[in-house]
Length: 316
Image 1: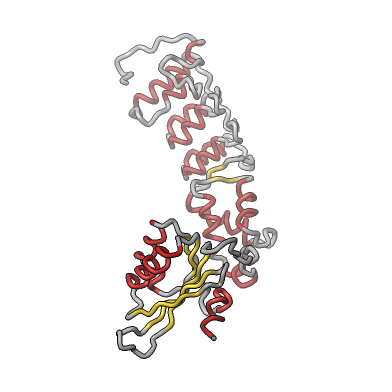
Image 2 (image 1 turned 180 degrees about the vertical axis):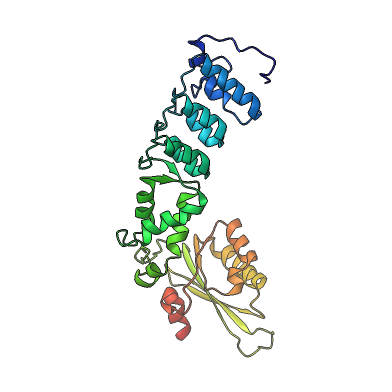
């Protein structure tokens, strides 16, 4: 939009309400809309001066409490900010979350606008509830909120809640977590967090072939048939145990014996409990359990009690 060759004709009432082109959700006035980096600097200054000359309220706020001076500080436009201040704009006007134009200028790192606001009696102690902290100052906020003697090296949640009372920046939660996790004093003095574990329980069997266990014995002396291993299968309910000779202990050999010699004759178990041998952990064995809808568990390494029935049988 070019304002160089147009006459701005508007009444005092019209320049202080949201026009048809304005943002109806935010409630921006034409003065809010005029302060936009989309326009070039010359047109922007000309339009703002025309609106102020026609009686636009330089301290009016939109639905979020943002005044034209807030927008000028956010855009970093020194000339527009000076023009608004010269026309008695409220330099201490807070928005709906307590952020003043000085907070906006500090967050953007604009020293000229901040100095201009302070010269015009801006409150440097205004407690902005949502003050945006520039990247260069975030480490100081983290240090004062966690490392200081009055902060007592609080945990992540308490430190985060403390910072949120006065400050905000994008990625605040991740920054607090990273900073506290890297604190040397916390790492030396605080013990690791203990995770709650459920108590161990016995898994029973309510009927024949509901739960079976498997175990491989070997390597044994080779027989005349070429067998060197024994696959032991036992039912937890009836204690019925069968043994099958094998030439090797590959996954396909074990799966074939269990299907053809056990499942076909006796039935499909609900649960199978082998050790952590690679043949039982193989993809082939897992696919067999998936197709036959068998739930597979495993024993605990170096803990014979996790499969005590098979251990007792093998000791005989």
